[in-house]
Image (tube, rainbow, N blue to C red; front, top):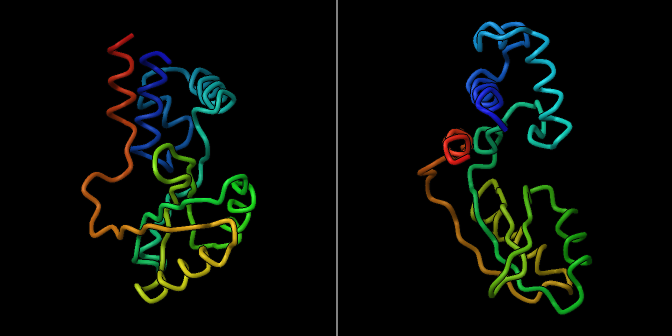
Length: 154
């Protein structure tokens, strides 16, 4: 990625509803250049989607928790399929260390979170869970500083 790619991505994140023509104007480049860059970044998997960012809290799920799972040996695929069936599980990552999976989970209340955890534990593939409830967001998801730093280190 070069400086123009970074400027394009940062501008798209700052103005998610902006069209290609306006992006070109903001960046001071031709519309065709913006289209080609967006297409290239999308094809390379740098840009993953163009959908809105949804606030799960405002959508009725104010509890955010991170649930670590220990999985029975050889039963990872089974555990992942069981997790996939739970809509409250937003993301699942394979991890190193004491736990095998890390799940980002939302719930309507702490009672609802307990129900979700019970459903996770209902899978015979899951041996143990460890849950941490997020109390606040200190640094929300961001990529702009990373992108800007990446071009300076090249």
